[in-house]
Length: 526
Ligand SMILES: Nc1ncnc2c1ncn2[C@@H]1O[C@H](COP(=O)(O)OP(=O)(O)OP(=O)(O)O)[C@@H](O)[C@H]1O
Ligand SMILES: [Mg+2]
Image (cartoon, rainbow, N blue to C red):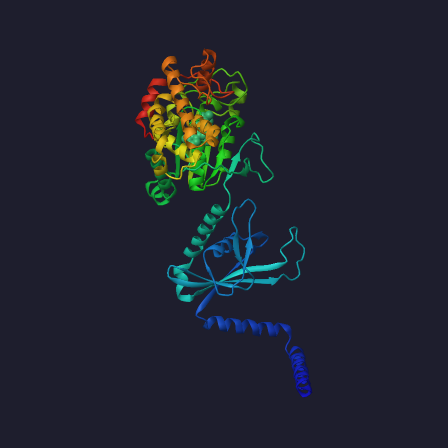
């Protein structure tokens, strides 16, 4: 054993001596040149070519590095024994896996096999920089066969960028943006404030006629998958939906369901916070693709008049007006107000197509107050009437709120089957909104399914009776509340239905009512 250690020690001594001689005889430059030459020779005869994707591109982060990391973490197959790192980005609800240092993954694209290696080395001598660089130099090295090079590049990189964007969008929670800062920009120059968007409404929970629901979902899917179609037909890749109907029929819930269905972010545009067309355009430019731009209660946000009408509308409050090109305070303020044409250009003008894959949704309780130009196809391509609760919609609410597992269970009610038939018979006459039905079911859901349905039936009957006597609908009577209560209350309910929102003002344009109804009807209605 002793001899063994002595031999090893002499061998190491000889090696150190040789290394010293080599260093003394060959200067560092010569050694580096030889290493480079050897590297070149190996590469020249190698059947592969290599591409480095470094983490830092000069002083800024390299977008492709991030994309490759994300892409590899979820699509490529790690070689056996590969070590994955785990992380969860801020606001994300799912984990992402990353490739650890010096590990490799294999991938295939267009029938060609490629290998990615994650190389991490310590950064030497930071030098002076305003922005500290990471302590390690990281890069991905892509190895592909020489013969596959033309086939793979740049299509493979485009594929990675698109896939990474998709993964990022799916793993990240939806965001709801608002422009509540009245045009002021944040530190990064953005006029929108984001908050996580966690609205639970989906097309499953949305109570409406199943056939109409399916038509809307198909339209949305067509839109989202329609990149090639929009390009071929020369149309901007955007679509407008107008949701109209009485309060509480699910317009806002529909927007949330759309966002959840497509995985889009939502930009809730508060028009009253926008002071000029230029600001409106800036807001539009700062929205991302794959998003829904919403203007709720469009008839109430601003004064609406026909763009052809030049006379300024009286403005009781200093708020933006959609009113031809004439400013209400005259001259000086002209550049500072939103005009109808500004809004029209926002939805279907040259600027509306900066960015792609965007949906515009306007909601209103009074479609007849909207300018026909705003309603035309190209701006509002689909008009969706959110109606009072129909029986198929009521069934969805019963399922959601009372916990029926399926339609079959609802049909096999035994004793309560008669109650279900009663609901079917009375629901149309009651003209009740899904919001009111939900409220009754929420209040009574603990009393059991049959009892809750009976309570709902009582409410429907009372409302239908009230309507028959009063000739008009109203908000739902609370369960157990006497049907046909006093007139004052009835009047109040009626008023609440007709002029639902605080701060909503009559816009003073009812002249275009009938003609516009016909026009709206002529359009594609759902
Ligand atoms: N069609 C529906 N399906 C499921 N739930 C609904 C539906 N309509 C209304 N609701 C329920 O009623 C409440 C109000 O609905 P929502 O805010 O979507 O109505 P809205 O049409 O936007 O009303 P408004 O015109 O006053 O803004 C929501 O909490 C939702 O749960
Ligand atoms: Mg709403």
